[in-house]
Amino acid sequence: MQAKRSDTDDLEPGGAERPAHGSAPADDTDYEHRHFVNLLAIVFLLAIAAAIIWTVRSIDESERLQRCINIGRRDCVKIDVAPSTAVRLPVR
Image (cartoon, rainbow, N blue to C red; front, side, top):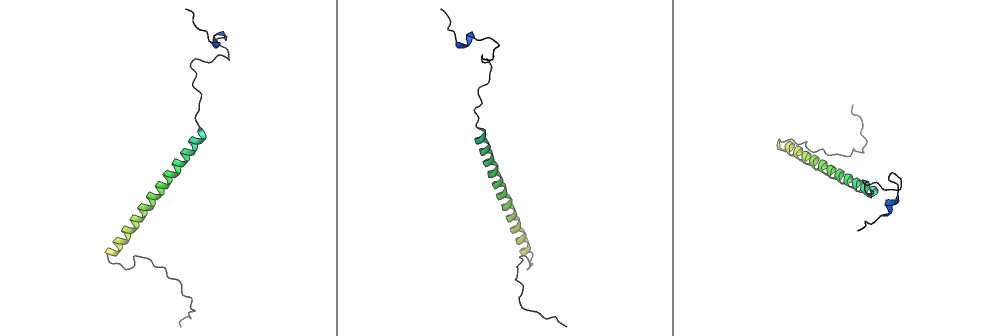
């Protein structure tokens, strides 16, 4: 029984045309898609971090206001009042 010959048997052992036996498979990674997905993940994580920071600050402000009210203070909430448009004369 005779072994089958392949097309690469006729090539020189060290020639450039002969494929290497241990060569890695072709890299078919889609780097553009990979970068896009990584960017989306970063944006998503930043949005979650911003939401957590906002929530913690809101809870802290609410607790501060509640402590202020519980000790009986009346100036816990700052109320902005528009400046009066009337002309005031200096008092002598």
